[in-house]
Length: 236
Image (cartoon, rainbow, N blue to C red; front, side, top):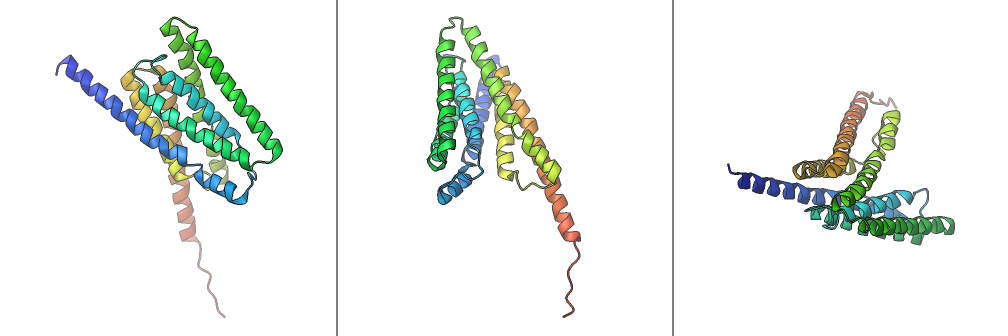
């Protein structure tokens, strides 16, 4: 097989992994919809927190910028997935503020302005770096750190599942989407030889796999306990 044929196959495989990652990421983006149906129906944010959507918006904006040709080469699929993610998170934040009480609304607005301000500083600051290698390194480190922090957030849920021995607070499809998306972009990053993509997504793959293993373990354990529970016999 010629070098050009190998490169062509690698390019096709990379694009396929990126497209798959975009599709699987959609599962993550739509996962909060049931929560917002409840918030809109009740007209209150209740005990729900808005910060996760702020964190996700920050991550999407930084990673979206990293994927543009101004920062890294041939990573447009990174830009597309994070652009879509940023739109979803922005809509969730607006919906949250519409139903939140005044104090929460002010805090969320302050956080949103802060995120947009930080992103503007990163965007303008990175463009001041003339050396494209240093520019990519600067934004790449930020995007990598942002992704790792986002993927690390399920550690609290993992701890809760182990403590309660219940998967009630860890939806299966959310864990599956995280695993599939991370794995897709892990492959994409490896084929691109992009450390800022494959390192955080490798961590995300491990955490997603951990969630799935815990889910099946405690779900099967719960079923066994239900099956072993003695039947109540009535003598009336």
